[in-house]
Image (cartoon, rainbow, N blue to C red; front, side, top):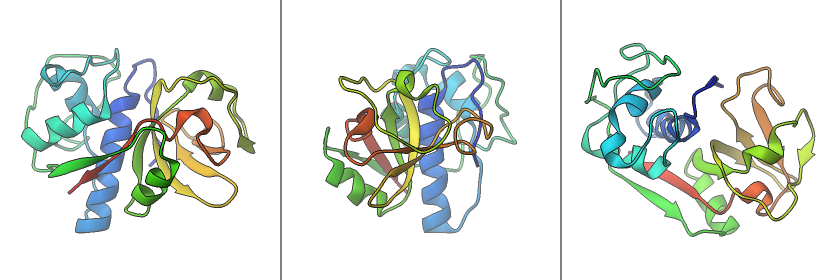
Length: 189
């Protein structure tokens, strides 16, 4: 589902956990919503900084070692707090990083399911509809979930809620628009 991070810089956790949820649904037929809060509160030793940001790969490493619990068991508060549950039944076996700048690699990864990516959040803030082509130079600054593509656009799910963009999604011009091909990874379940 489209979610909203609020005033917390949790896009990296959203991008990683949404990709894991996608793989759980595809590979194991499990429809679960995983806990962002667990990542925010418990993964600092993996290099993440709670509401101050982190990396999807750090989330995957945490999920590999510790496992993740559900959102119902560890609800999202949009703040960084003390770790309450540092383990869970949902684990990642590994992850694959797409070579930086490889849009073909991103397309190949997307054929396996939703992909964690980073986008230039500054350039997409005022997006409402249509296909956006970011200006260059651009810098990836926010986690997102690549969910599809066709000849005219990449379809990206953001974590700004359903009232943002096109019901929580943005359509980006093909190619490396908004740096979508520069930092992409997909978990293996």
